[in-house]
Image 1 (cartoon, rainbow, N blue to C red):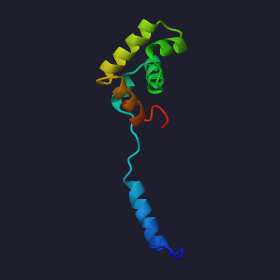
Image 2: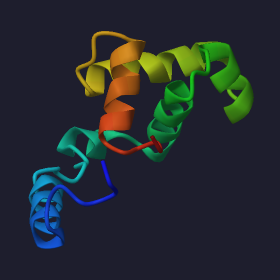
Image 3: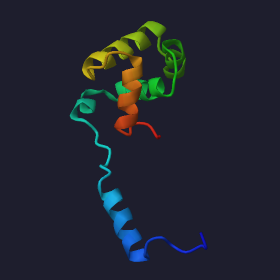
Length: 97
């Protein structure tokens, strides 16, 4: 309360170092290696919140082709839905947090 530290600097450093050491680095699961360059690009756009139509416009492909890419992503990544694909993209650091 008087501006003094509750812990000595050496103790504070050990606590911070122990906490940081427990945070695992995001790993790129092997299953992402199954994706083509275009599939990875579609996943990034999907994670950005784009619809199939918007993905199609951005990549200059048909909406049906965009839908097919999303369907294949669901299968390859064993995801239930688009929301789970977004989670996978963030957990694997495919997109910035």
